[in-house]
Amino acid sequence: MKTIIRWSMALAVAAIASAGALAQELKISHQFKANADGRDLATRVFVKEVNARDPSLQFRIYPAQSLGIKPVAQLDALQNGTLEMAVFPMSYAVGKAQEFSIIIMPGTVPTLEHAMKLRGTPFHRKLQDLAHANGVHIVTWWWTPGAFATKDREIAGPASVQGLKLRAADPTFESMLKAAGASVLNMPSTEIYPALQSGVLSGTLTSAETFVSMRLYEQTKMATLPGKYSLWMLLQPLVMSKQHWDKLTPAQQKIFEEAAAKSDEYFLGLQREAVADMEKAYRNAGGKVREMTQAEYDQWLALAKDTAWKEFAAKSATGKDLLDALLAVK
Image (cartoon, rainbow, N blue to C red; front, side, top):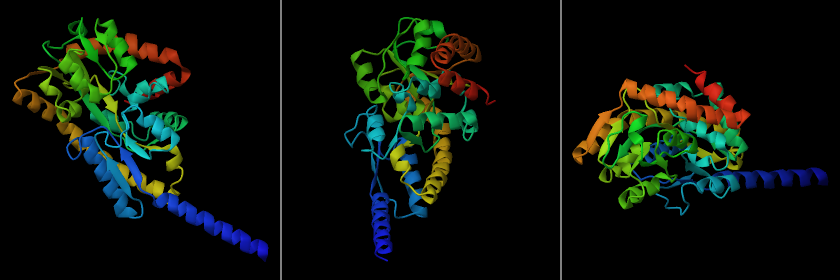
């Protein structure tokens, strides 16, 4: 009887401890502007949807680096469990695992519609396996189309970037730009504005959302938007520390997945408008805007296949497997 009582007490203590761990406030960190940038807005939709299903799960959002964690350093905090969640451009993780370059591989995800086709595919599952191996769980499926913009040069085909100092957000993408004759610098999007302002950069590639929310149209005057297809498309999802994801009950994990699906659809709608918003911002600021033609896009795609794609596949079997799975989705 005493043994049974001891076991019962131990189980009760464990249950209380577990409940306390799950009831604690979950911190969500990101680098984007509150109540304006789509990544912040979609995060708030996710939180609202979770709370509608389970009010016991409490969140606090820390936008614009207000938690004091630099954008790239968020990964370390997620891995060691000091940070529960973050909106994290996955290309920032290439320092930990070069295979994460797959989520910005030039020309592989040409449209938002194609990006959403990838959800739930073998590619998605393989990417989640890579994330788990690096201490994080991908919660949402947020993709952002991007564009070129420079201070004083119209970007068309690869030859047009010769001699420019550009930022592209990923080493594999940068290898393609180098082959075209550009110099490249790697930095998070929070550092682009001052780098353009000081002349460290003469142009950049980043998401249409970022061009607007971080006012990059103030420092660049020539923008080349994606036309029918986007050369630059980046996965910037809400992610969770794997150790905290594992603390959720199966029912809570299901709630997170349902809330993520709602936020995915909301975010998709915002991104469909983002390129038009970028165009409007540039025109209002007196900038010049053009779309990439099909011929120009085809030139970039041929260069990407011969540089970024080839180099990435040669680096590791995991990378080749990811690229093959990505290209298998039509």
